[in-house]
Length: 231
Image (cartoon, rainbow, N blue to C red; front, side, top):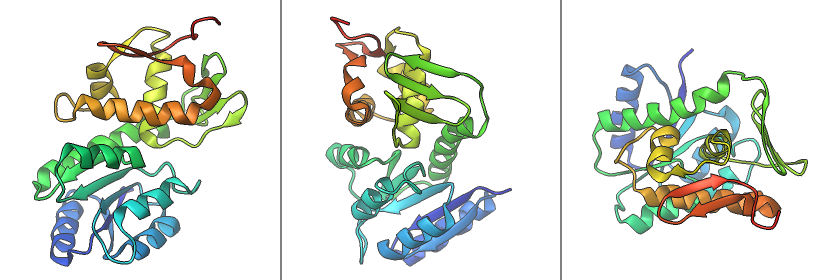
């Protein structure tokens, strides 16, 4: 069955061209030309991935992304932001809001498809049931149900946050460099800035709440999940 991509962008010519190319590549494509309609379709159709423009009428891409990440039904749908803004601060702000990737206009259609497939590949591991759990202090990941709990309380994580935490717990206290995390979690080598990792770790640490001290920064190297000092 074809994976479904929802493309939300008010540039109709761009939407038509990208949709045609994605269909040629084997995807089922849904489109919307304003943020409000895009949000309604996302909630109704639960696409496998959303391509989301930042500057749109009705609701901006930022507002749509906030709504998606605040809804249990859509929190885990991967989102790639598409924007003419290409400053690093814009990308980092997008990641702070919960985006899984960020593509700047104008873009190559082949590069866009590569990004889409890389993000979907990240999620493919979640579709394959794994037995057992990963544990670190109060943090528990059930690999079969893809649930993350802290002291018994279920967390709502994005796809990238989930994969990031799984990678760190599988390391069993060993330090994971930013480069290793970019390669393993994002599927990229040097195409994404290492600060992308820092931004996602910061969001993940906030969601871990009382367990946040377990997610440790090793300056100049990377991150690990290990008992905090004093435990």
